Image 1 (cartoon, rainbow, N blue to C red):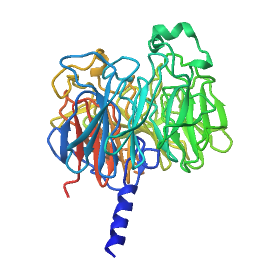
Image 2: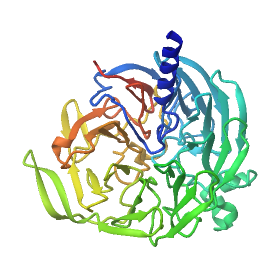
Image 3: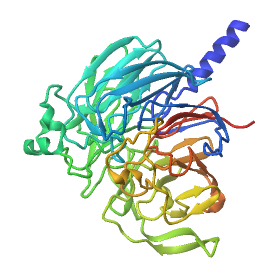
Length: 496
């Protein structure tokens, strides 16, 4: 009986692992109950917190009582760029560091960019092994004791090897996006060095699936994948929705979305869409995919690869906004269009609701994929010591745990709304968690009948205003939320 109970406990722990940035189901959604309100600034709900060696962007991975995260290598003073990253392993109960390993990069990149740096890809764990990825051109796989099992290196093409394509764990494989050749001239890692080579397919990026045990290449995607997109597994885990298009004219064409077979990377269908920008998550359910094209929201039949419905996200919308200190709902509203993509990686499909953060204005939105209804909730951009700021956030200090500056672009100290490769939200049970670059976390009941102030459970935080910077999605395991900022690794637990 004791042996059977032990097996059940081990089995339940494995099911509760968060082995990749998009969680156990590969779509940023899981069952369970997590803290719905917390404040690292006030030390409320914090189980433990430990300083990190430097800035970083990838999410936390939790597996079999271990916590894994990557950061840029430590510096001896202020720094603007870096290449080497550090993969670390911690004990999930105490936060004690167990080991760390180095992953050199073949390119140097600006630190803490609001679009990308070498730590942008999160680790991946299958429960026995952990794979760290340096977006600057390397990946290494270790066992849980830190023994290196295999490694791969390549030279990224172009400066905008974006942060947002998270590695995918599927069927014993780690799936990453990269160029096919491994031996390009290092000069192509810069925008100036890449431009003369044009848009040839030799420099496209594709999904590559590697066996987690051996590191051998299992397959390469048949359709190209732009670096800006976040490809995601379908609900059945038999397909991957991927895409092409985005800022700085990525070479992979035609712009639009593709459905791939997750077993071998083969193309099921391609859907070219004029003006499509792939700065978004490839969300879908068992019946349809949902994406933003220009100022429209479209649904796509998974079986046919054809557009089903299209609805404007700017005209005839419902907005719940504050007027004279009180929320009120206004229907039939029209929002101002923007030249930039409507949203950046903040979209998530939960039930019938496609959630997102809008580019302009501080609004959380959702589209009902069945009815086409579009709703918005205005929120403060920041809460400082209980006071809501509705128009402007305090600038970030952009300093790591040692107090050193780790940035070279003043835009990195902004609010994280608008033109920014934002962290993806997650859903745990009935709650949706939307983090921002300044450490705010908006917690909502995603299935609320009306998107109004009653749906907003809390505006939590990952640290003090002006001193907290994060482009990492949250992670969940065993009732706890894990987060990382520029300064520290954090474990949050419910007070009860």
